[in-house]
Image (cartoon, rainbow, N blue to C red; front, side, top):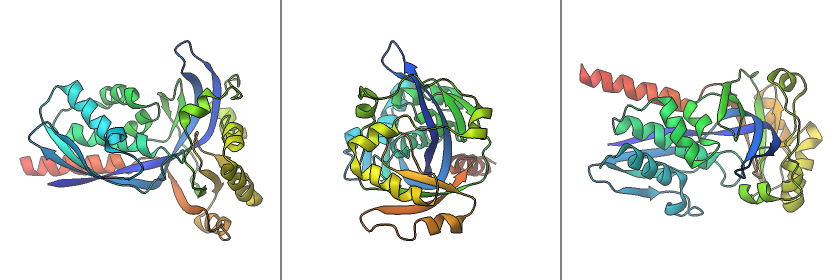
Length: 288
């Protein structure tokens, strides 16, 4: 039986680079806002240890797909001989800074933990998730969050309901290249949740990305005509917040044809958690 599971995207409402650690990773502060744009993954459990991607984006070879790597890593860590076929329907732009690959990996961990009957706790899955990427744990936890460390120190963050106009200028940005850039600001003072909610923050990576990717700079300037626009993460997508859907739609009314744009709603809770609850309820019904 093939099981369908959602993998929602995120926005970084701000991203401060606090410093660089001795291990080369960067110390960050950010606010993760989950949104209702999502990839879809379907899983078919195998009785042999094979892990296969049966469908997915052409831009990402199966061997580099974080969903495949997540399945392999969980299988190895759990020491089991079962496998899975994974079909990925991609809706989140690749390289856009919306966390699509990380979310795909998180959904794979959560779904296969359930479908393989491992019974791992969210904390244990979160530890494994961090091995796959700094953004993966927040998707495993399934709540919009305040984050520190490299992105793994998470605290639930209640956020006001907002709609977002998002513009994807059609380029993919390399996260590694951005964090290796010599001109990246790496000494932003620490802030607090209260200060962020009162005054906001900035994305320290935005100047680097805008300088290296002219299309991103152009998209930022275009969307800022109707209000403040920001870059999300280290990707190429830019966004602006609005109180209602109609205002967000209006902001994209004259979107240049060379770009793509969409309106999304901010979420406090990931649809992945609802899907997990439904899976467990169905399993319990079958057991009765």
